[in-house]
Image 1 (cartoon, rainbow over the protein chains, first blue to last red):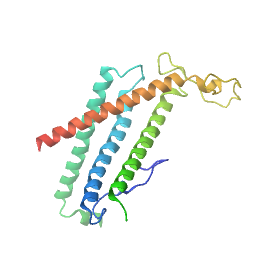
Image 2 (cartoon, helix red, strand yellow):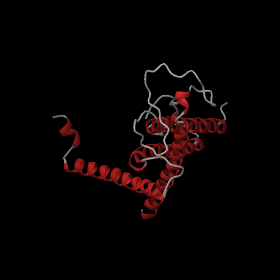
Image 3 (cartoon, helix red, strand yellow):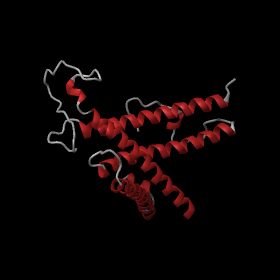
Image 4 (cartoon, helix red, strand yellow):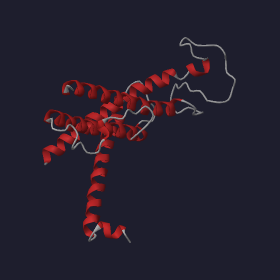
Length: 104
Length: 105
């Protein structure tokens, strides 16, 4: 997700394959950092979404109800994400070839 | 000759900067929405201002800001802290979920 102030980096690449060339240490580093970045991005995204659902009035501290809401929100978001992936996979399998339906 | 160790350090720094910017951008968005411009007040003890086209009071507050901008600083400061708390809560919850998923595989 691009925004003002976003610094482009090699970590934007959807696949790290081929980066780092022959150096296995660099290759490994890129894999690890890419994974970490995916995690960070999701935390940013979920915090933003769950804030809308869980935070009514920012007070002097995060009360336990809000905290529970955030935890539940994360779980439901991951559930939703998995459900979508699984169902998409199923609907693609049930069609004889996905690309055929696209070329209609 | 390029030193891979140096490259890795530089990349880590770039990533950290990018993450800080991302956090700042979203936090600013959320706290602006919470603290600025809602007449009637969504917050208890809120100090909110309506943005508008007034010429404004030329006096400044202790922050050196014009008075009309000084009022919601408490709201924004609190909002920033709560946003950080929320971010940390989400990070922990997501991490737990990932570990649970791995354990179940």
